Length: 235
Image (cartoon, rainbow, N blue to C red; front, top):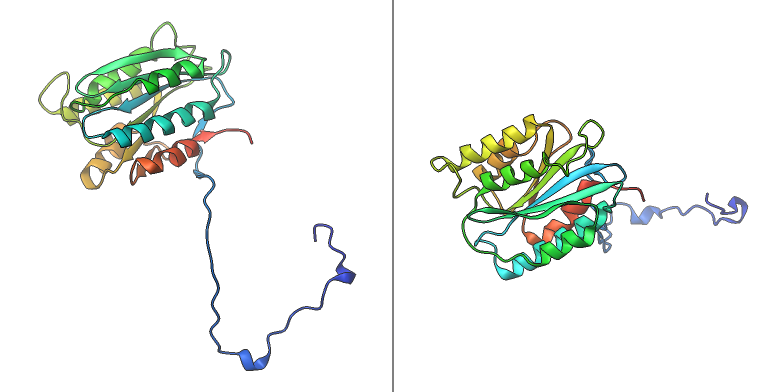
């Protein structure tokens, strides 16, 4: 009873018989404070190496890019990077990918690089995954037996170009498959994607072992809650 004196409690209310079968109304509202993913996510209280991979192609307008930046920086803060804990790097991509930030324990360095992003060009997912995987195999990557590797990819569409040419989706799939074979766990957030594009990102790019690794965001405004939900952080 959380401290309530049962002897002082009022008598139980009994609905009068004349109210039977009457219809009553009430106002109901729901406030969402956080997103809880049922099968776990990315630990922020353990040693991990994580590459944040951000789409900056021309299909993302200035307002959406600003929202993406805000959500990505909040995600960095939620992971609480530190010298002896979480290390984060960043790759961004459009027609080609760039390694914007090497793996670091300094969260502000990552956020500063996020702020510099501008959008334009095509969607080269293959190059982005190759660059992220390369950083997770560099001298800055710690021992994978004790410090697991992650990629968190945010994109609003399927590949429209690739390094190899030809089948851009197949080339990106090959890059993702190689990364997963190297022990990298890939989480994907598809923003505003539907149908075949969402299915492609879920089944061909994201890791498929439990827990769930693909998440749909209806638009960029949904991003922050989804990214916050990806982290398993102590209260």
